[in-house]
Length: 252
Image 1 (cartoon, rainbow, N blue to C red):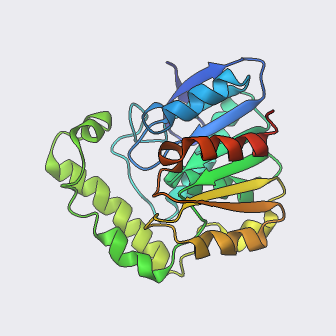
Image 2: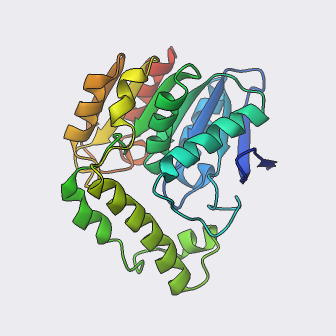
Image 3: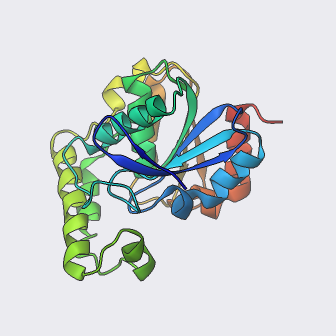
């Protein structure tokens, strides 16, 4: 699979699947993952539907550079700028944007930063803001003794200290956002002009429904769908997930 150097200073590994002449669709993975690791079932399915599916690994994860992954306080917006630079490098003007978890927050930032470029936006496990009650939940991720060996190997984390440092960087950035009022893209949701679908599990401990409801109220063409599951809707409610994405993308 190819590596692509982009104008924002990152080099991204990516998968390019489906019909090269199909409508482009960018799939953005979550925290500590890659396009294949997090979204393999999603990208393979959508490639079979005739889209040109591009699944970049965000900077610092998997094989993408630079390493180690870091977390400035605007890292969601930096990742969004990376995604636009990725599209530019491939001469893609417009695309459907899908994002899971942290990739979903990135997708929502994209939709507010350059609203003319997404054809549709579909996110799950994300909602555009954080509420104060999430601070303790986020902090509970440290130390990173919960991280499995596959995730460590995927991200080149060979010691517990490296895993702890990466996780602590993410935690500190999220807590900064929470303490600054919690806004990621919520305040600019009214700028989104394309159809938007947010999907959440009712047992998602990072994304209570009120977050997505606030976002949907501001977006012009937004829709929220809840599922009886946790964070990874695409894994735990596959048929329902497919149904809603099909509707958004206009698939028969």
